[in-house]
Length: 345
Ligand SMILES: [Zn+2]
Ligand SMILES: [Zn+2]
Image 1 (tube, rainbow, N blue to C red):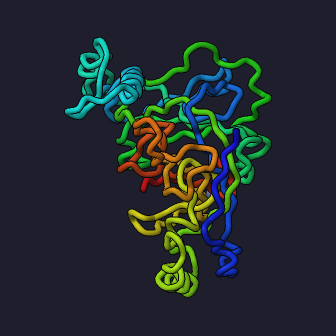
Image 2 (cartoon, rainbow, N blue to C red; image 1 turned 90 degrees about the vertical axis):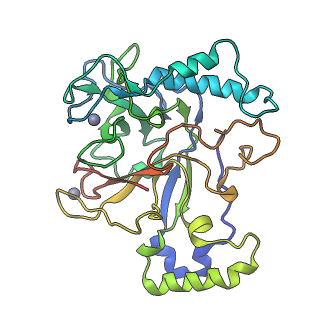
């Protein structure tokens, strides 16, 4: 089943035709829990990784033994998801079965064996793989004849390239060249700094949508006219739509499109190699939920009172970055092999 974003409550390009040239087509990925394979696009699924190619590691110096074990993170989610579906005690809280509560108590954040020196190579964690055939917005970024983007990260916070977030590795390849796929369990670190850095396996339901830029990218006069419209005529419309929340930036995981700068205001990203302005390629979001009018028609709304009280309906990947924000990956339009940029808001 595909996923369909409802039409915007107002077509901003009909109202302000001069915004037309700023439109970008993005691919919303719509990840949902499932059983992806190495041959499919996914978040948290197995990568189509050549058996003969070494698995990438992080050698940057930082602590790598303190945090939570990925196996514990997954078991904790399993226990909590089951507990949410049981009748709730009158006193509040959740109902656990058997030894589940003791199991949860034993899953501590702290040092876990083996103790590793700060520069020991640790395997990266597979985060996502996206075939260009499924995610058309990637086509303009794919270098040469590559058709598959694989995204891995080192799930610790103290990297030089980005403060307080995992460091990302992008691998472009030609899928047809992977004749013998890495078998067995994929490598992953023994410990991650934060449970929110462990993705749940999700299949994707990509959908093409139109994004418009964060207002600071627009000419001042146009941004001012939009603001006047928001404060006047838009107030008379159902839901009083706003440019920022309702009309411009699709929420959730997406490829391409535009990004929000709600925390820092606009900070343009430039290529370390050639100086060109980088372009948003991928958004790794903590939530798919961006207000009722972005929720796909095919899905029950997370605010539907008939849904079981599982709090994670809008958070299928269970990835949580920054202060429950979005990790954005920017790529050089001249050459995707130039160093990428990253920012969390
Ligand atoms: Zn690292
Ligand atoms: Zn460049």
